[in-house]
Image 1 (cartoon, rainbow, N blue to C red):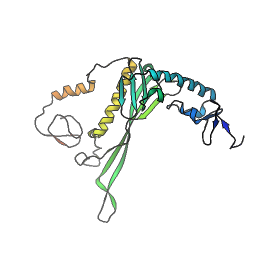
Image 2: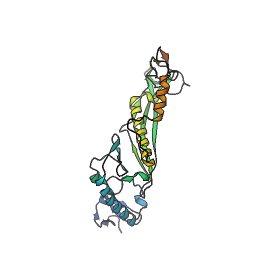
Image 3: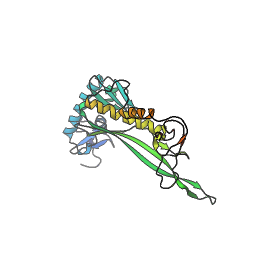
Image 4: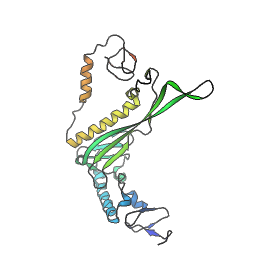
Length: 267
């Protein structure tokens, strides 16, 4: 068979257009059929024609569940984790019309774990000296950048995990002069002092907590406070609020029970 011979999809039988072929282990797949596969599926090239047909049959059954899905809780910002607590189902999607988008609908029992990965990158900030050259500050100054990824591990015939980023664009954090380390050996500022960092870190914690509760069948009462926050609240009640103090973690001047710059409790 020549390079430019016409090819036909081994799943639907339609002719495959130029640049439209998606190779399978033992055949060809058109891009229209490929679009119907699960967005979390990544083993197309090593799949057989029969395996792809089986997945497409599953995807059509999944569409029926998507039509029945009733969101009772939504978590996230752009791509959301949606829970249907009546059916004990969940899905991850950007779509509003679930039946049309057909996101994979999974049972709570399919969840085997959930974690948040926070990726940090660091860029040194430079200054221009009297000769017009870029040189380092002393001590060096850095801008930090963060990305937040949720990884939901699942038992599923076509994928093992659902990975997605919480933040649309990277969270940039340049510490103020008060938060910068005073020496080369003083470590780095705590990113918790950045409101946007806290926002996505708390969002990821909430998603992981909700899915862990879904998996275990536990339900958190309305208005309940996470154990860690409750302990911090009790500890705060025993800390005197009067008088100024200097934060040992970042050197910031404060008067309250917690550092307004890095969030550390009053010593």
